[in-house]
Image 1: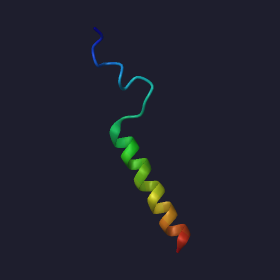
Image 2 (image 1 turned 180 degrees about the vertical axis):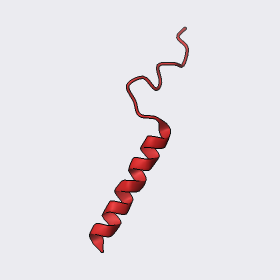
Image 3 (image 1 turned 90 degrees about the horizontal axis):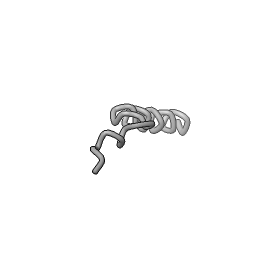
Image 4 (image 1 turned 180 degrees about the horizontal axis):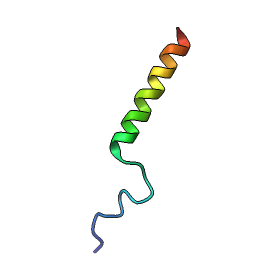
Length: 33
């Protein structure tokens, strides 16, 4: 059985996904203003 090391291969870390989501929401907020 394979170990769980391949979950993050090729993907972004969790904090980067959260940061990008927050930046997208802030951008949409300021565009709507």
